[in-house]
Length: 537
Ligand SMILES: Nc1nc2c(ncn2[C@@H]2O[C@H](COP(=O)(O)OP(=O)(O)OP(=O)(O)O)[C@@H](O)[C@H]2O)c(=O)[nH]1
Image (tube, rainbow, N blue to C red; front, side):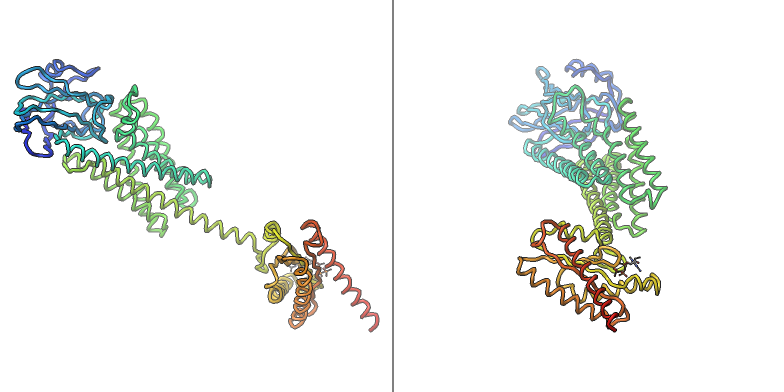
């Protein structure tokens, strides 16, 4: 270890200590050690160059001198994501060592700070002394830097750090909840996977930032570690989401297998992690991330190369997240000392990623909606004549609220066309006949092909008088249509029809039956008239 560092408390807002050779490795303790224990441990501690990747307990002492002529309050912040036990003592040059408040994550008395721990120290005027710090955790994921803040600078830093952290995991949790609600409404599995993907990431950071522990302190275990344990389950959801988003089962079976395999592996890892040491769990989680990140970015690039526009948001989000993770790793390895924590940058990037993921889900839902609308329309259109079919007719009848008029139309002599010229010509005849009907009746209501050579015209009617007038108008229109048909090559075809209104009957089925009956009567009358005509000639 190098010489004991020395800090002069002057006018500076913040004083940062380089982490190199600051800490000494010592024996972990079962409970918060006393000053005597710490000084004892310090004497036998092993020098280490850095705490990064370390586990267990570390101890340090820092000489501090207050150059002010007044008492000074300062905050000491340690950048340590995990911290089971943290305790510090101020040993003035003269006098007894003073116990500063414990600042571990299991202790509820320290100032609440996302991703870090802090404690306060009051330095008498012109005081010289030694600050002893003991820290203990299952894992030191980052170099544990020590920064000394003036009171205003600390509160400012605390506000910014906690705000950014809270906003990001709140946004993630909210987006996850939105995806969850979409699942309840649509039952699409992709939305459930999306809810898991975003929601579990949000929950993970809520726990990992320390905020969960700050809200629910007094737990028998340190909840901050749980953040890492949630991660593989979030990745399992992310795999399923990606697979379903790009319809991999149908379009890219090999990718689907890869995502299923990684999802299964992540779940197994996630369960195993609960039973292994946190250090192993920590490494395994990073292995999962190392497989997932290139896989999702590669998939995004591949899908974009196939012009799949769902990939655009997916790729942007994962690139932002991937870059932030790289920055996180590099910043810790190179011990970059920016003003903003790399964890917060990852959290911000992940929030952007989650928003992009939800956008890609929206794209997916939009495609579904378009397909649904298309099949909805197609299922209600008669493919031969392109007018509404019986299904559409049933819906129209069900939607009627006021008075209505139903016209039953049946072709005369259609079977003969089929018999004489074949079904293809019969089809053509039907198409032409519908054209003629539409030209004459379109403005009078909606026409449906109820089957074979039968059609129904549905008209909304205001009152009895209106329905009486309508009977005349429709009859005239159909007689004109009949005449028009005679001008085409289908002279043998004619229309028989019957009209009934809701004012004459009690129900729609009665109204339909009455119109059918009148149509049949009309057909019979025409047949009789033809018969009589043939007899007289
Ligand atoms: N080409 C063709 N024929 C069809 C189609 N749907 C039903 N048909 C035929 O239409 C004919 C309807 O029979 P009918 O109602 O007895 O025909 P019609 O000659 O008009 O007899 P009336 O109604 O008594 O005047 C049957 O031969 C069906 O096979 C179709 O989509 N295409």
